[in-house]
Image (cartoon, rainbow, N blue to C red):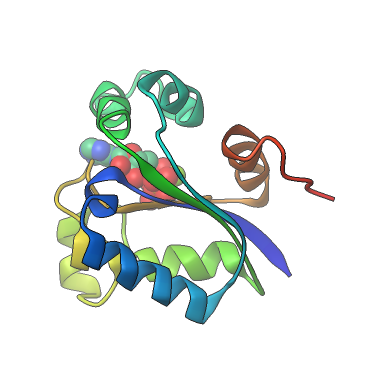
Length: 140
Ligand code: ATP
Ligand code: MG
């Protein structure tokens, strides 16, 4: 079994029908170990997205993440990292729409920044991201 950190971004959390749809989809595919609505401030999102510091979209992304509550989940399943990233679809929404119209980013993404959701890309980043958003979670 593997765990991953999933985030539903602020514009989707504001859309209650979309949020309910995604939570149902998640429950059908994963065991949810932890979940909470969390307002990731601009400052906290700068830490969360530190690997992107210096990129042209960094300020845009961290400002957007600070614009309202997100929904964070720790998901468990076989291959949860790859499975959640496959459900999300490509980072860029226009590619998501063409390659897989049913993926989450095709359905709820609005732009390259407001692409609906986040998923850890490795075990190492899952551990780091979980420790930032769920500091009380026991990883062992
Ligand atoms: P995530 O890390 O959110 O799961 P990802 O691993 O598919 O997505 P990354 O390259 O890690 O993509 O980018 C992190 C986030 O930065 C993306 O989810 C998106 O919100 C934003 N981003 C990435 N590339 C761009 C871009 N070209 N323009 C605007 N925003 C971008
Ligand atoms: Mg990433």
